[in-house]
Image 1 (spheres, one colour):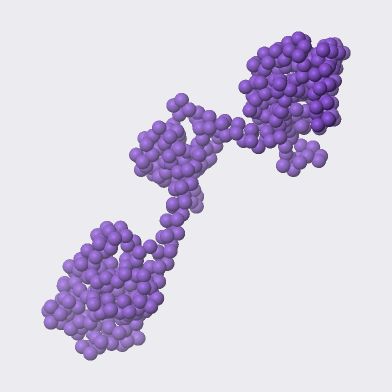
Image 2 (image 1 turned 30 degrees about the vertical axis):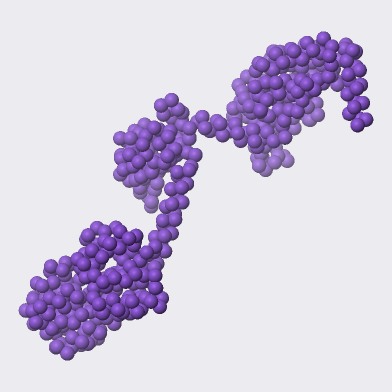
Length: 512
């Protein structure tokens, strides 16, 4: 960050150049008094200087000009005033101080120390210097001390005057202050730049208002979702731009409004609104919102890439061995089933390849890019089977994972769940499975929250489920839910012509 020092006279220019050369050589030193100093400051600002060091009237003039720079005033130290007063003693003991406010702070304390009368005549503009100098001498002053404008005015009337000059210590102090300010501003710029980058590249819309309900932030995603020009919206009242958002009400009530579903044109958004409170007073509010369709897309990607890891169907219909009419017809029917979204019940004896058909149906369906999750209902005790299917939250039961665990229905979202040996599922778990099939929602063990799931069910068994229903060992309502499409896998004894194909396959596989 570029820093410049403007001195009011040649003497101070030389002192500043000498002092800064050793410790702050990167600070540019220029000359300019009052209006000339303003011209110099304006040129420096145009050249990219952001901090200007100067003093007294020149500082006041630059401040009034509205030039976009930060000002650091060179302080008038006690040493500077003492040096000026010692010179003024040569003209008498009644010393008048004609200067800008920043030059006379704390001067009263020096009167008893120096043993002189120091009467102050404060001026706020260079045009007031003449009247102040004349009044000082009319009031009986022997000499005046002050800045360059004071000395020039007194000299014009032939009155004695002494310049309060800034010494090396004051210039160094101002330079150090300017460096601290530069560091702080640089840090602030970095934070603002970082904040702006976060807002601009965030995947959510962000709108903020100040205490007057005027928009201070309207990021690109907010503009994209709402169709409102963000640059135009800045500075406008939120009620004039988007009254339905209700951000002003949130600020006034000092209460969060989270998880609100809102419609914006043809889109649904999920919106969170919070007030900004300093102390106990609301000073603004912030809303962030997501396009619901984007949330759904993101959820699908997360489920597919994280939860579905390892849950992949590897078999296709090309892996089904056989050329007999009965197996070809079974494959043809399975392909027809794959084109639907209905549940499939696969019936077949042990070893007939029920899971091969289940995976093949999945890979032939529109869900082929989703997860394929298989579980053997006979392999797990009922409580463990239930926790595996539906998941659980922390502390749901003794030995539960501290982080909780998603169930296989959540894992299979967008894909297929294969329930092998479905006949071995206990009646309690059957009831919960039925509810998932009916509502397409799952509730983890120990939780009161439901999670929507989109899965296709393929079940398999080597038993006659209708007989189990009549024996009250299998729920009739679940049976009818699963038995929408029934696929019977013929055993090898019913297609003996396929035996040579199997023989060649296994010989090639195991003799290789």
